[in-house]
Length: 307
Image (tube, rainbow, N blue to C red; front, top):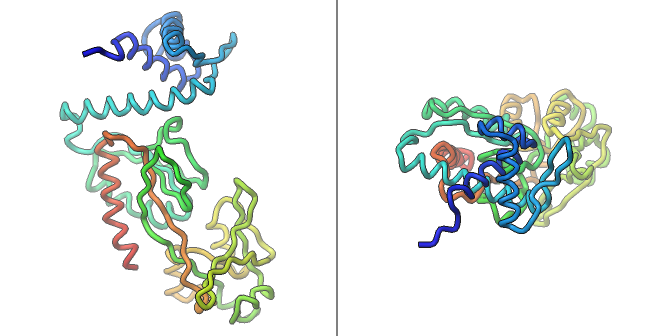
């Protein structure tokens, strides 16, 4: 059988990925225990084989070209799969182990996922969890994440998407605010209220409020004195302190609604939701820690769907 890669070529690919991640031939050489000249020769062999420049070089730095960036993504994924396949076959991962890197949005992170992690680690004590909480899209390959959860996930053929839940939306306010401003009975009456807005930092676009009016789906850009950017929980905090009305996820405020510190309004116009999705790369050999966490979340989502 003809081999596509010999040992030298595979070694060159590993050095290429190391140099791309460290941003330096010298740093890659120190990490690999060889000379910078050997790293440079390995990269040159790859570039000659591919017929393309992988790095732009100056006297002080290196930077991936567009071709190099695409090649890096594919090579890093392939090398990761090889390592995990070897571990699986050799029995090094009979139990889930290692560091699980997860990227979470603030709302879902604080109210859905973080409270579950102690239970997950109790089942799998050899797994450590590295948690990234922010409302931005991440690059799985270059940033090294195993999993991400997002709302309104964009289609991506390189990722597997698993639906977690359709999170119900509610409009809430404090009893004190409603006693002062009145309880809105129709969507038109929102114009007379302070409606706390949320703005997407990536686009500067305010998120419309979603309603169902007699079977017709409506989106409204209500107005008010407050606008929060990036962290939706800021709008919840404002609403809790009487700043006005806010549309948020029921799972965030269910305790306050049950205790009476917040009141749901416009219930006849409710029933809308937004989907949350679990995302992970299409790796044939998923590490056991990743598979264990996916199974764990799929188990938990049954409770959320019944709530």
